[in-house]
Length: 395
Image 1 (cartoon, rainbow, N blue to C red):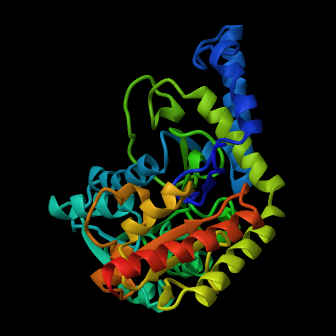
Image 2: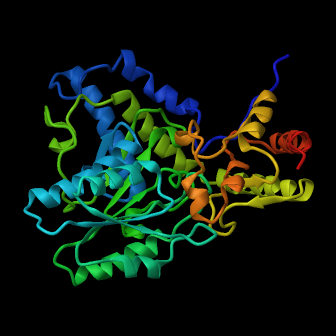
Image 3: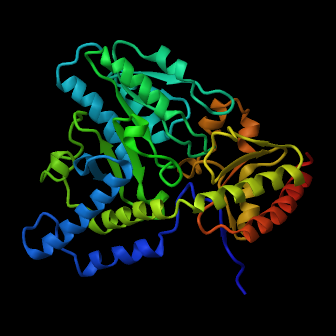
């Protein structure tokens, strides 16, 4: 009999909810029209897309016209950064603009920023975080210059699950903008936050927000860029004028419909977060009780309810991942986007971990499907695996 699989890598991706899948299916072979067509088949596809756009707008508390569909959050992040800078130069900007990001942003923010800096199109200010992984609001205030035009701070970190004070940073920028001619655009990558945190854009005081379908029990290959009216960026893809002329290309209607339904379910399943947090705490307590020489990485207080990130002294995180995988327990050594890299996680280095501590780290991210029995089994296998690996390494 096949062993049960215990999936604890929900920060990397989530399974598509059966309700979401059911909603998507007709748009593959029944309501398959092109949403740009003016006949009835096109109307059916367009209606599905616009319903989803409104579902997402309702969730974010914004106008449906402020929602732009993309292929995912990496595209949304890239588009926002390049689009804001391109618009600055397009409108006759003279002094090189400044972008502020944190040291623990996703690579989808860091890499575009580095590219702009390398090509002399922008200067980048990188904010340090404290040992808990938190950005200090005073550091944001100090970093803002006359030529700052964009601030991008991740709402919740994908590796250590730390939640940033986005509302307070947004309020700071809003107050600064009152006195400025060149307004600062405030963006947050909210990919990991959507399932668990208040993502009302008015509450957060953000001008732009990125999200992705496959992190919230929706399909892969679909995401959103929320862009507040009045926030100017250049077109991402030029062509037939889709997405109000800013992102051309025939829309991924099944994906869009799936994302709309997934967002709808986030609201309906908020009560699940309480039990997920209890299970998370059970796993944290169990690890700290049963395994010596471990370290929880990142703030416990300001943390996503499903995220656990530990360093296990004396072992390689990759070795532990493989041991657990052989027992059908699936975890991560960090961000899945960087799992093929042998370099230490930039996030873990930013909070003060050494290379050795970074390589000894493992991330567990729970999901709606996680049960108390799962946690019991994981603790049982984890203790044995850590002891075995430490014995082999002699540490």
